[in-house]
Amino acid sequence: MEKSKVYFTDMHTTSKENLQQKLSRLIKTAGMGEIDFERKFTAIKIHFGEPGNLAYLRPNYAKTVADIVREAGGKPFLTDCNTLYVGGRKNALDHLESAYVNGFSPFSTGCHVIIADGLKGTDEALVPVDGGEYVKEAKIGRAIMDADIFISLTHFKGHESTGFGGALKNIGMGCGSRAGKMEMHSSGKPHVSHRRCIGCGTCAKNCAHSAITLAERKATIDHGRCVGCGRCIGVCPVDAVRPASDESNDILNKKIAEYSAAVLRNRPHFHISLVIDVSPYCDCHSENDIPIVPDVGMFASFDPVALDVACANAVNRQPAVKGSILDKNGHEHHDHFTDVSPETDWKSAISHAVKLNLGRKEYELITI
Image (cartoon, rainbow, N blue to C red; front, top):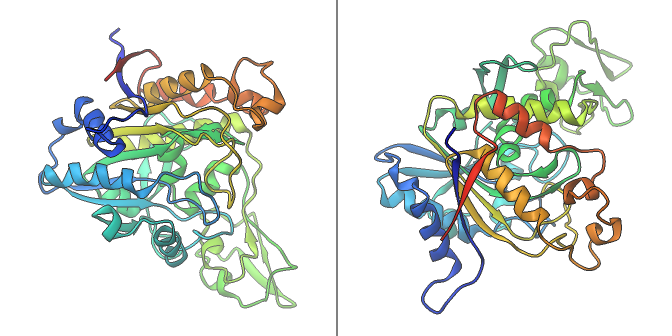
């Protein structure tokens, strides 16, 4: 079987070529220009970074990708979906403000920012998952599914639940609506914190299944009626409605692969990962620790599975940064991600993605 091609370049520059120009050359060499962008809406999926975190990708890289799409006649937009947890990206207004604060504006990137699942994280498309074992119908941000072409631009780093956050994590978890994220994180249904609940009744008014009642000015969810849509999480003004986070990490990884399959099926897609500022945990944190390994470089491929494997292998070949969590934890597992977060196994997402025909583990690394 033919190996997937993954293209790579390091972070060295010359007086004739800066990092943005080098990224442009990488993705053009990798074949992104083979896609017909003419008059096509093109979603560039990126993580804008939680305010307070400084490890997220600089907006300059997004501009490089958007410029190439525009040059080819396409209509690019940067996008992400709202978060399930409380923070600076839980609704579209806060999310846009966070993106702007972190430098992602039409003026700096050359394209607009669209929060794909709408104001409260409830604007979703229901997408069948062919061959899904855990998810039959993924809940994806509508603007992402409305796009003609999909490009992932990923900051490759560690992750406390999935081992690392790579292309599949950026696509699967990142493109899920709030209800979709709850489905991936949870095998259960949401619950109400009575300590936080103010008894406004907004959740009950928005429940299509009459699963929420109020007693003594406190809401309660009947799990016998609840279908786990997550609407109540999005509309609660004080974040009193909380998801259960009780799914095993392996099943979480497999659900992420199934959501990725829903996003990518039946349309052109291309994937770019930057292995720089490899923080131990997700960019969803409002802080970041020092990188666990030195910067490696930039990778690109049509195959998101091969891309993730190539990036993981590249990280595992690096020495630990002195004083980092990886350095403190040691290297007994011979896998940097397991050493940082011992309860995780990133290979479960890769194997499941292969099973879903999302890509191959075997790759040819082409250095430019």
